[in-house]
Amino acid sequence: MSIASASPPHVGTGPAGRFGPFGGRYVPETLVPALEDLERGWGRAWGDRGFRQELESLLRTYVGRPTPLHRLRNLGTGKDGLARIYLKREDLCHTGSHKLNNALGQALLARALGRNRIIAETGAGQHGVASATAAALLGMPCRVYMGTEDMARQELNVVRMRLLGAEVRAVDSGSRTLKDATNEAIREWMTTYRDTHYLIGSAVGPHPYPTLVRTLQSVIGTEARAQILEAEGRLPDGVVACVGGGSNAIGFFAGFLDDPEVALVGVEAGGVGEELGAHAASLVRGRPGVLHGAYSYLLQDEDGQIAPTHSLAAGLDYPGVGPEHAFLRTSGRARYVAVSDEAARGAFLTLSRREGIIPALESAHAVAYALEWARELGPEGLLVVCLSGRGDKDVNALPQEGT
Image 1: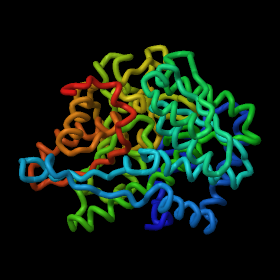
Image 2: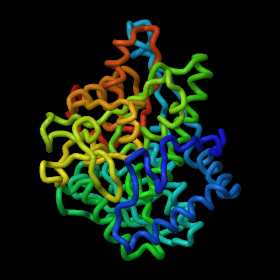
Image 3: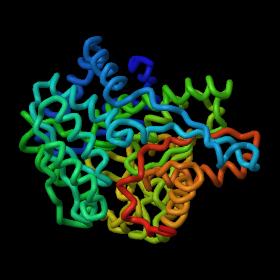
Image 4: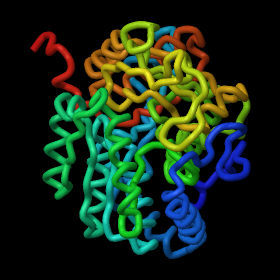
């Protein structure tokens, strides 16, 4: 399936990368030339047949696309009173998640722009691994910023990044998680942008990053739409994806945006409670503001200061969300819900033991909600869930019951 078909219209995009009122470019003046250069370079690259062909070839032969669409055999079969559930298996991509779709595209773009070095931020470590992988493939040095809290709970991915030749720069400020790693990556990029590309991992940040990342990840939704039509002869009642910054979800939703009969549901981290600091549900419990260069929904206190967050899943432990998700929420095209740590943990174990598939804790949030929704829809219903990553990185974060 051609990457050229994974380029849907930028629904809702206005001037300067706006999605309705959301998005924009709220950055220090020193970064404006770098972002303008990136925007021009992206336009040239995406319009270049050779660039698209190289990316398509790598997605097929290196990443392993198209990824399978798998129907659950023991859960959500239709015979158990639940809707039929399919998983879009991004966990089967090389490196174990959807992140490499974006990382490869941006690394190729960096080369086209004459940038010879990569920096990135990471929370769960999957984007860091993908960035290190793409940099190794293209022969570029790579530095990944990662909070020390995340380094402790995602130690396996720290080892993987270093094996791939990347420098992992520990961040010990603030909450020592993804927000703080992003802060440090932006600080460095302000002084190194002439020879360094900042490879943002999610559909967040200043324009053109949200559009760039969405376009590179939209291959997920394009494939899934064609695959479910082939498997079932109709579109699903709904599609479900986890949302931290929101890259897997926005890429998945892109394939179904023009199908109003398909409900789009994003699942955020409900953590351990509804009070600030107990969750990471920016769209469900936040309000609009500016974070990391864009206007979107975020978690903030009464004084407008960024609030601490919590999630069992490091990749969802972020106080903001991509601006296109904010637009989809306010326009009503998508809805967003929060799933607790406990429910995600239960879905992690259920999918592992009933289907033989160990999901990332991030993806387990989407699975948890899909199982609930499948009960409401009944056996005639049909759902597709984006299984954005595999869970080997998370096994030490869970009690080893029955072992």
